[in-house]
Image 1 (cartoon, helix red, strand yellow):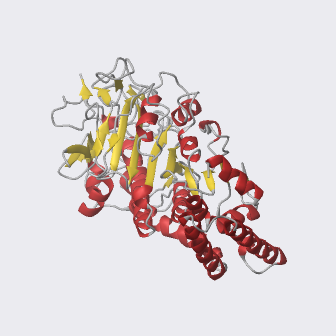
Image 2: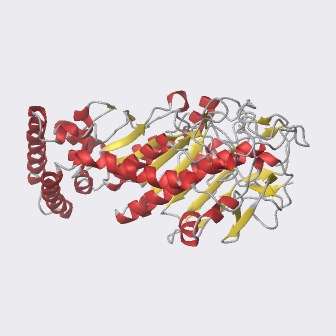
Length: 549
């Protein structure tokens, strides 16, 4: 059965949902129940879905040098021209008072990675970095937050977007979901008229699954309707030739799905709070940890607020304001004790459920600031006169502030991803999952701090498909005109089919090679920088990324 035939069948049997805006409880409840046998339908139709694709959008383009915007990754690379705002750890004196920052690295599988990875246990560090790919050294050459975020999702007008490419080939019930709107930073394009389904609300599972509970007449009516759905599908399968092995498998799977549906219908209401609490604990524990290497010192509020040698603004300055002062005797490095990441936490919890239950092919979530992503005075009061939130757009956030805030942010992200990995391993899904982190752009550094890095773009992939990492592709320059020090400015790749610095099609083409889809719509315009071997290692046709003088 072709993909088009399958879609006709789904529509005729009342099983298709096209272009929903998921806010009505009935919509997701219906989808969840029907999805219990979606794999059976796919197998009966002789379809093979691509891998699960989770796209995380780091809103506003936070500096990423402590996490994945790696500047010098090879011992044979030339030395960096240091800028204190691209530091990855603090330096301190004999009294353990902070004196500055440095670009500090450790080595993992022969690759130089930022100091933050030393905070992980050896097992967790291997679990993360062995499955990690950094794609750097590309850019658009054009400014704009929403423009560049959307461009990276859809870099070629004649092709689908990244999520759309997966959605076009998936046999899962929801081809594509987006949780928390990205507004102008979003672009979803399908070559097969698949629609992106938007999911809203603070409790995307518990609130939307209430119709499955037996406490109302409405719920009982819905349950009866789902029994009719099972009958409908069973009748369709009975009409097919039983000589087809796929039909026999589908019938058995459908029977198992119906039993599962009956036994678990009363349990949905507890799923979301438990998942949310689980990820909240993991992420917040990582953010709020103290005494970590490179951060186990004191940045006292009484230290002078003086300009540093290259003319940058205050060491304490955050997002254009110097009011982030905590006072004598208080340690700036203790102000993360109340920080959380609400949108990332809920997004990862949803990803856990959707992938574990084979619900969707592509899921887009958001990691970014909210009213609760706060740095707080260590005595419990607000920093200065206001609580300080992780900003959307970290202009003029220099030296101390950049290193400190982004380390908290990415420690939380990394812990959440490691927990998702463990859950998906248990569900048997991790070896088919691709997690990609994108943002508006990277960050350049001039004398005024952090600008818009539309020529310093960065993306990374964490996936159970990959082994033997970390891998780094794409070249960056030691320096760029008008910039202070090395900041990841894109550099040409020798022999590549794009002249000069590569554009976002390079990133899309490279990620496409990992998606489990046979075609790569970007390769004629930008060749992929990786090829996946059967054992999960990556072949790098243009070699590993370099720092270019």
